[in-house]
Length: 89
Image 1 (cartoon, rainbow, N blue to C red):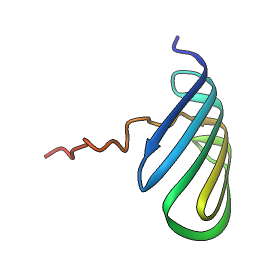
Image 2: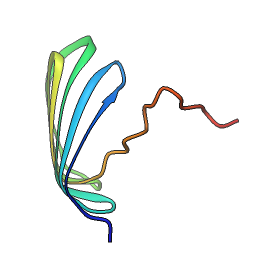
Image 3: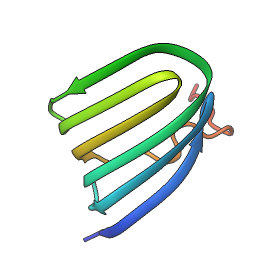
């Protein structure tokens, strides 16, 4: 059984995103928090999401800043946005 009490990582994709997962199991986490500062501004928004992959997900964005809280959600993939990613032929 793959289990971590706390997992923290930083990823970059049009800005930096700081991700923190608490009580992380193989595919799901009890709580995931993220804060990002993007390179490009966006319209202010508040998004509330409930669905198959999460119990509840709240995303708040304003200008270049974004904050996200997810409860009982699937784990984020850490290496999705690496710079050495190549599409398969």
